[in-house]
Every structure is written in structure tokens, then in C-alpha cells.
Length: 101
Image 1 (cartoon, one colour):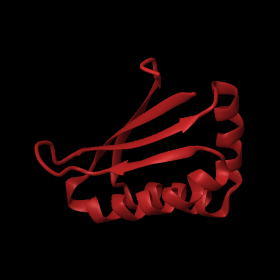
Image 2: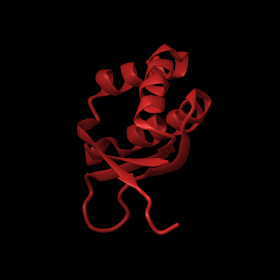
Image 3: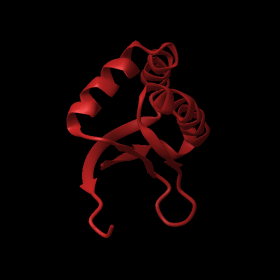
Image 4: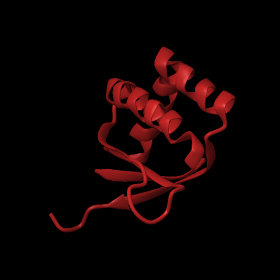
């Protein structure tokens, strides 16, 4: 099992846009085959740093999941929403493997 941590830099004036984006992924991500831990927005400290975290079986499973997500109606809508509203300044992915179990 792999954990993907998506680090976002968001526009703090559009935090409500990011919350909508996160709620949409909360439906689409599990439907397309990943185990969503959640999306997180700033509370204290940085006003621009947010995260999305999910687990997936392997990098091969990730490739199939990404294809399903790109074909998913809510996934397509969410990608378009992010582009149109410009609340994501940047995003990067880190892949981690849990070793304590």
C-alpha cells in the first residue's frame, strides 16, 4: 500500500473554493478506486498550505485510478472548476510507504 500526499499552495482568499474542490474529491476519489484519508485546509500558521491524502495499492493501480478519475463526470467538473477559479497556485505529490506495521 502506498500513501499519496498532495501538497497544495492555495489562494487564501479562495479557501471556500478549495473546500468545495475537496468535497467533490471526497466523492470522486473513492468511487474511482483510492482510499481517501481526507483533505485539509489551513487552521493555524500558513494560510496557503493545504493537503489531500489517500492510499492506493501500487503505482500501477494509481495509473488506472487516474484514468478513471479523468473519465469521471465529477472529476472532469472538478478539474475544470480549479482551472476556471484559479485557487490552486501549485500542487506536488509525495509517495510514502508505511513501515511501522
